[in-house]
Image (cartoon, rainbow over all chains, first blue to last red):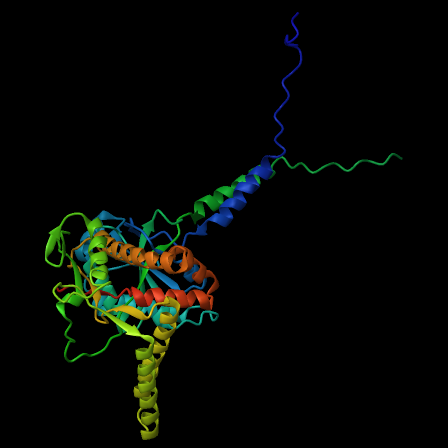
Length: 170
Length: 249
């Protein structure tokens, strides 16, 4: 009668985990292919605004034809008062004051020139077409962007990009 | 003597190693792409007298320190409306010029007129070269010639008798103030980009039977001459001339 009666004495077989490495490796390769490495963790808080119909900068990045500058509130709120309108500029993780320092030392122009000189030899684009990408916080004052633009104009770095978060086009 | 069997290597910790690598990649990489609007800053030139631009050719999109928006004297709240204003700016006189309204005029140029222009410029270049003028003046003329040649090719691709073209001075201005939030500034860029995309997409569908996004992506990848010609035509029909006005101190 009891056809399906449990044997009781037989122990549960262990789950075969020999394919676990394969699964994990597959995941690993997926993430290696689908993601790009973080350039740096900016020292300022940046929350990009949302946009649409943008251009993807990945091809420019691969040709190292793009430099990023970050504009946001400093991570340490105590320092906010040191900066013009409370927003600091981060160039390669070095926080630059945006008050008078920007004008006396020409931090942006100097940074961009140095960056351009250090580009690999395979990159042949002239400075006019090397993109300077603004990654600004959504509440950052636009006046600061124009201050930086003016410095870039002075050294003839004429191509810029305004970074936004694009939800529609991934 | 009996042959001893070689023991298998224990691969039990392989999963741990793979997990370790996986977690390393998860932490050091990011999924989000860098998406941006590419713009160019005008070259620094000393201009003694600013060029007069007719009011009808300007679409000024303004935002003040309190993030309030205004387009052509109209104050409004919803930033999504900006694209409608841009579309109106391009479309009002597109089919037929009406001098009574306040929107940019369209010029319609035929193949014969383009040929005539090319012939005149070529004659001028010849004269200048004989007279031994400065190289930059002659280069300027060559650039003009290139532009007309481009238009000629565009008109051929367009397939009509005349090429409609918005006034050369028609431009969109973004005027913000010092404290305007960057999100408003970026929103304006988005809205303009959306409107231009819509205009170009409409023509692209009508002329070539495919969406503009497909054409653009294909051109970005392959850089084919055919696609470039199509892109040129769409850019001539709907040029994106955006001026970002530096705010006053």
